[in-house]
Length: 301
Image (cartoon, rainbow, N blue to C red; front, side, top):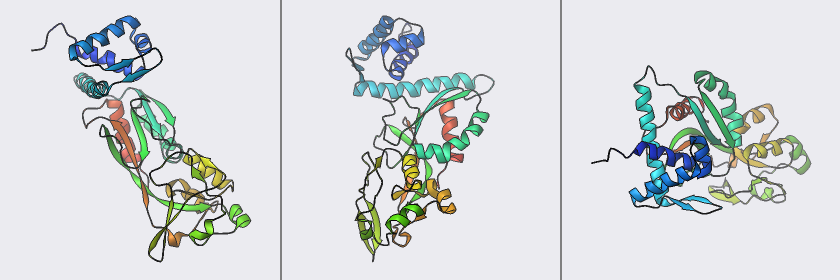
């Protein structure tokens, strides 16, 4: 039987705030507590659980595996309490800040045009948007939701699919006029193939020639770390790109970019997901509102 003098939800709230803000001092400021009081509360929680939740040092704050698991479960429990309290009122409303991490190309071509509608539907919500194409740790980066491509790498993450896009190879008319138009993969030798500067699950460019898959390894004078930057370089005539058709659709339709070797395109597709931490448990109303909105309006393809 639980002791009446233990405020479990209060301890969870303080611990979650410590993780979200990245340290005891920041959490103390946000909670109007002293750093020593926050530290003692977490230490008391660790003693009661008989588990080390945080590895402490003067320069680094890091969760232990037990701490990460407790954070995920505590976040779900606090979300459930929040929803229960709001459901007991007149209406459940989405309010508060949502930290969204997304790729620059998804933000530019899908998300940003929809933001006025989302904010009009949920005036109590504020958005903190970070743009990066590189894979992030949602806990370490304190993100509520991330929009990403490819398979999940952690069992603690839950994903909602936002559609998929075909991958196309393209270049600008100015670049092709200057360097010639490649007709087969072998023609790509000597061309400036713009690639990503970070590790990807599939780095090579596949083509189907006479029923066989041929892989071209992109090499060139420029590498970038985001898809929108890659698109802008292609439009400027810097080189050839291979990226999602949804981001290039208007450029291809207007003739600003030209698709290449479409008859050899294997038709492979890249899936987009809205990813969040949890095991399918309750979510804060604001996060659920964004996920539902993206699943309905923020689809790719």
